[in-house]
Length: 478
Image (cartoon, rainbow, N blue to C red; front, side, top):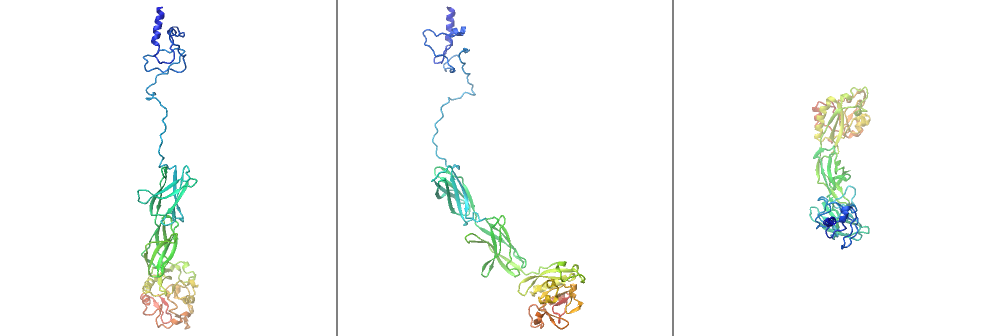
């Protein structure tokens, strides 16, 4: 009896506190390993379940060993995996205001409408077109088009448009002002697009040109056009008594640069006023400031070794001298039209310096020369060359009117000047050329005639040339 009382006392110690779920084994079960019977006078308890029990905070002790037929309690949580607060149900979402900068809802881009070729985003050319869409589509929505002007800090509304049935919208406005303008589209209270910017430029063109140049050398007028793009049509213009006149036309290269020859006034002496220009759609002309180009009267001689191509009909095998003993001089001269022309003279090498000195005197005195070409252009025929009033030097031929004698022109030591104004009398007494008969009488003086008082004549005589005056007014030899 005492052993049973002791076992019951031990079981009482192991009974969990009030509120615990499940039935603890009886003392006899702990001792003997058999199921415990309910105590007399105690209410029956529910059978054990698979759900582990949670001990109460008021428990003072816990069993050291779990019965074999009761699920073990879960291990106590550690500080690393035990939540500090008791989990609760997810909070109810709070209402939020619509997004005002969601680029996924409004998208825009800028285009240049009616802008031909390289004339993109130029003041006054075409129109600025803003194209946008709402995502997802919002048909019939009102969209505010806003712009921040160049140099500005705030946006201002320039238009309000309505989206179509697909949620798209467009706005077209003037192209300008110059500078960078920023645009955005706003769905009031809902969304604002990203900013789209357009840089608009004023059309412009600049030019530069040399202050002075040989009138027979076309000066280059160079410059740059804005917009700085390839393919812009530009031109040089010269000022005439009736206004600006187009000289040359070209197109810009990459970067807007260009270079055009100034052909106007070639051969004339004096100042040419030039500018560059381009015409925009609608007829507006954009022009550079004008430049003054002085077309100069200069002798500009170029001396080089004569080659066979210079004397194709005036030299042949068997002539006393060949190209190796000759020099070709290209130089300017005044014409009877008051303009500068380029001529060529082929002479003996030893005569280069005296010829240049004498022709410079003639040039400075504006002595007119009709033309100056190697007689090969006339087949080497002296009579035909004379009829063309051609000033020439080397020509391997017989004396005109005397087939038995070799002309001194065959040695490159002689020149004939203005053969019409200064005719030649052949041994038979006939004056050549026929179109020079009016100049047989040496008075009155007329332009192009050589007389003892002509500066050109004096220069040639002073440089060692002999003049066959009296019967061959055109001929000098040295």
